[in-house]
Length: 598
Image 1: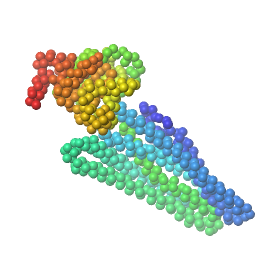
Image 2 (image 1 turned 180 degrees about the horizontal axis):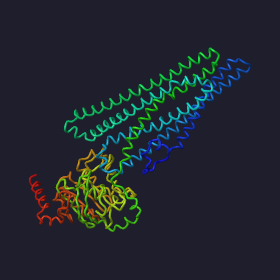
Image 3 (image 1 turned 60 degrees about the vertical axis):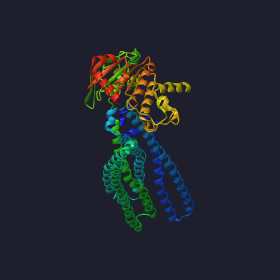
């Protein structure tokens, strides 16, 4: 199977230009279609010869008739065989193209940043990856097959019909230009309504995905009726758009059928008159009718083919919206060409200088500067909205940052491929995401991809990570321990259990920099203090940056960086900042009072 390269710029061209990469299969299918039409169009000629043989009633006519019957059987069998082969080749090319495009889209989605996902909802993207891609596949398969089949049918039948009677052929095909113009008008209407239907389907899919993901909130706030009403409205919108499309499509086929019926009436009227007048043989009239009959389906399929075409083009444009989106974070090819850069990183120390970050044009971080020594534990604190999470995402290279603003071990991380930088950082976000698999598999995702550990060692490392994250005791209360399936987004676990599972996933890694963004906010203060007090031993030899809103848990940090309105306000140890009587001291006293009240 031929796979498309992920960075192929031709992916944004016309959909048929993408299918050209499977031209071997398509050309083979076209060759079989030509043979199919040759066999099919030879049948009227054989019938014509059989009628003439019966009319002649000459000696040896019976033997000749038997040969013609055998030839007719052979043509029918041959037509069946090559027709099947033509469909296998062309439909398989369409399936291969669909497979390649789907992988290309998913690979591209993995490269896009948060700005893209703020513009496109999950339900809309799912609709484009399934329904729209199915429409493109139909264009590649049935659409291409019927386009080629119609061309071949006319290319073979038209010369044979002209050979029988040019005038009769003209009148037989006289309704077809009007037919083509009408079909084109229908196709335009179908295109617009197809796009409306696809948009309505995306909206309905988005509604279902959102409500099922937030089913607990729906039940907690008794939103069932309100959300059901919203879904009903989305569903009706889809129904309405589907009905409008069906009306246009249902009107097209009768219109085409009327044109074909008109051709048959003209042949019987004009051709029958010529037979009576002795200007045309009965065999020629029968053959002419058979040729028109053979052209009936290719002509009628023009309407359906145009419908597939318009739906496929509309779907391709929606898929193109995804592929046209460029990631804000990319690897500079010139810099990637320096393979020794990562090897020059001497340690896991961090040096941040004049780091500024904006999101959607809004400045979040402004000229941040601080240092984190190798093997130390640095805490990042600040009020809500100070920019702590944005800083974590910037250090993890999930956001664009200026060149030379962050160095690791003396090397500018913007000069390294994203995969290499992220391969050095274990990131545990405040709002963790768990995959719908077992706890063990979720934690094991923190292991290096190239790590091939024996099963016993792998299990031991997972269990040690669970102990360090304070999750080991919870496993005993779960039905299958580490083998418990957490469900979609970890729904079967509590908020604290999800956070500690994500923390264990970070701790199990051998990456040199740990980045923990308030990853214990869902556990109680005492449990957080217990876990953090043990982190010093667990992360020995690694650099750690800890973001926490509970300042009392940060006494073991080697350094505390205080953010205020996106800038560094204070830097020092826990004791130094308390003695300075500044922002940190004020926040610390306020939290102590709240804990005493509670």
